[in-house]
Length: 600
Image (cartoon, rainbow, N blue to C red; front, side, top):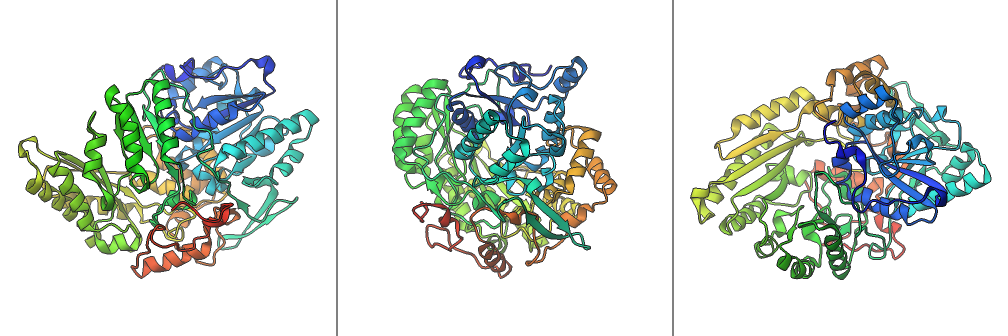
């Protein structure tokens, strides 16, 4: 097997419990490989939270690579928990953490390997209950046929409440149906089988009707107090290399910015920040336990953390004497600080990354990026004069209202960055590395751009070639995301529960690892949509009406549709909105807080 440490468990910090003292078994599943899943901070947090519950043993489960999956099938080895090696089909709760739509087929792969029926309707008994959480559950409809329920929002308290309800159901001998009806009464729990869905003659969603006491809309759950919540300072240390092999420290949840394409910026609202003193203590404890030589400060926009200077000073006082580096991803060009970067990168200097998202100011205003060309050039000028010799620039192609002039403006902006380096660097002999990367715009639920179509794959390919041909120096390298993958991702992101048939057909045809380039098969997806009588372009290429009932309208993420429509109209007029710190725009997320005011 490639990388056998993916499958052995036994890592430092794993949690082993006595089966004799365990009342409830929980399989925490990640529908991707070990290296990806173990890099997920949310998975580590839930692992710690669930294992603190008395009588509950939570184990980790990841999707095997194709070589291991083949061997498991050949030798009759069912999918198992890493901690015990026991088949997860014998567990009570099987929860998937899903952050990427292309991993939907991975859920089917893991259920099949476990010997568990794929369809919820075919699982008649109380156990196991199969459910899913994570960012993709703001539209769970494409996998509605396969899961018994979805948890919407942050899972620390919600998963614990669901677990306690199941404990009661197990003790008292409830049926599965009784448990699901009771679970639907927990805020943040969506039970697809309790909603009757009807489609119109034009293929759009006509109605969603709850029954058996299920709520008309399911409101997401959030943590009110991050300082008092569990943070896994003593966590599992992988015995093989993973993608983000370092200590990660979450500064805050939510985002003060209002980028109109960004799902995370909306669904993680309202803003809630930890105190610097809490973070310093947690960061040092985590490093002492793990032995890592790097700590990364993570959030949607790290440089917007109010106490960033004090936090860095407190961490560096401990890190510098021990040669532990501190990294700051998610920086913005409009508040870049060279003094801070020089301080935090004394131990180990990493590259700089900025995300202008669009090349022209017109398009940046449309998407509400609120970053100017001068902001970016000044940030690069400051960095280059301070000794940096590399920068990565992230953009999107296919944004609403984009023209060829906007595409060519990306190349112009990259060249201006190159010129700034020539003017500012104290050492030209070192050269410069400017990397331009483009992804394809994907309309995501719960954003002002959820109504817009995606460009055709042919148009995206044309724009990529146009941009590549406009690069003016070898010092600038260009990489791009494949439109085929983005096209399927867009269909799943805005999909409905009819797509469950497509997912199953794709999985049975080409396997579950569709999130990986080696296994992604575009033709199989096209054929699956055709075979199931669904039009891929209906989902991807259609401008949705503002009054249209959307598959995810049953989910309430706290942000009102009125606010999203207002931002959509401002985008069409090319008008920006201020960030939350400058002016509250009344998005509605405050109503989720007991105090009624976020930390923006």
